[in-house]
Image 1: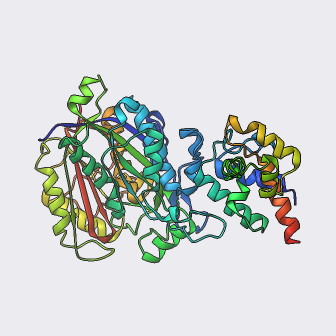
Image 2: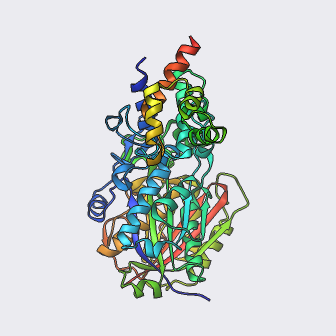
Image 3: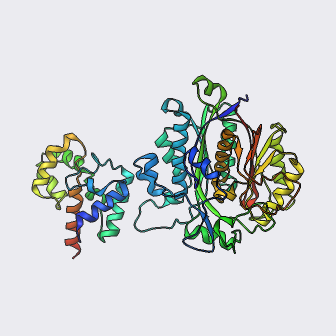
Length: 386
Length: 124
């Protein structure tokens, strides 16, 4: 049994805003709202300004067990449900698929009884299920920077196979804490030596030297086409393919041959029309990722309409990067225009349609790519609903 | 140390409330909707912040109904049984608990303060 699966709601809390007009207006700027990190001025970050969970979900005493990234995810999920116009009748058997990161600030504590919950990644899934009343199939996925894309893929498969009519899927993450900044810095993946923080992360540029840290949450409401049409829901897009793979090569850097990553890309491409393809690239701005990803793109989609790298505008949202970039991609699709890759002055390849400036585009399909630590790869094939 | 202020701040933090909404008369379970998981956290936080030993059963008056049932079964005086179990509560408060019990969980913020006060005295 394979059913068509559509996206009927998009909820996001991102550095560029938490509603479509704000995000769209921010995407028209030449650069994203990057700053120097308060805990390390040599690191560029892109925070969500003035985030207050209560303003999104009301009183939430269990927020005490949630990381900032998990709280961003929770806020995004509530917004997705509102955006889709779903209520308790549609949600009681709904699936819940979340891509999340580790809690780098957790520690055993004398002043808290249940600090164990700080460590358990499904704590936010449980809090979300209680708030939204979603009790169906679920997974809490921790596959580094591929996590939220993989969560979307698993939700897609669950709805397509008939295990759920409705599923919420996406992720949230924040690594702006002292521990997060330190972890990435010691791993040697952050942009450094920049004059202005907005120029730190430069995906696919010859002078790229690493990424800037972002934060945020983005969650989508997925439904079977039949269910969405049955309730007269507005449809944003259709998910047509999902894939994942493992490099089995290095715990941090990508396999330079891109063998497994390419397998995930090609698997998704099989179900996407080649005309009018727009790639939402992983595009971290690290030397190794962009070299590997560039090779894969040149081999698989040299004639794509455009390649976008949203991390140049919101930073790297770690586990949440894929869902956040899909949220931005769908906003751009709806407006018919995409921003250029910020900071891209000297492309590392001439054989790729890297988007250099704001362009009017009506893509027929989107390919979302996420490649994470541990050689985790995940892709999603999406068709705008026209 | 202002015990009420400290305990209010603990409750506000754990239950995600405005401390201004908490008075000594406020019901912890009935009004503030504290659940068992919250009581666990409140007990540990009071122990840590106030540097007192905490017995959750006594602090949260968990056994009031059991004590009263046993007293009834043994033909003992209800007020006397409560007085013996909860020496940190005043006679007036114990009488109030007896009359208030049918309306639901009786624990009030003032009971937590009384417990902490007695524990402080015992400690010093």
